Image (cartoon, rainbow, N blue to C red; front, side, top):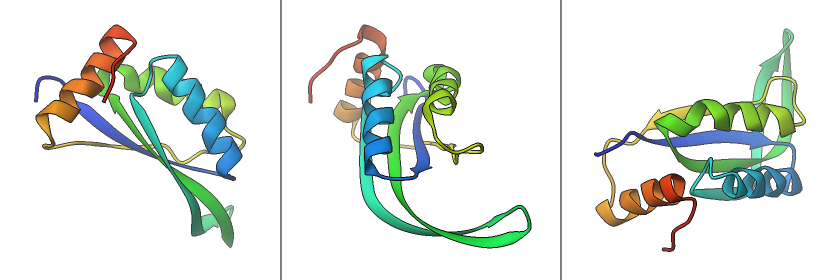
Length: 112
């Protein structure tokens, strides 16, 4: 791959918050695409207790060089004090799709 592409996972309180974050990331050219899975049930440890919450999950496509700013932007908007922001590097993928992600983020545009 020419440039490291990341898939960023981020849970949010609801679909409206996910849409707000997604629009901001796309408009600021920090992400090429954000998918929103509207309903996930999360069970997690928080301050020593087991908690359960209905959330939305975002799958965000970006590049390594955009990640630091993307993380900062999410933290500024997100309603949680410790938002889940986890990134994994993509090992491979459709060349055309990878090129599109890079083009979107390098030239602040692009079409599928």
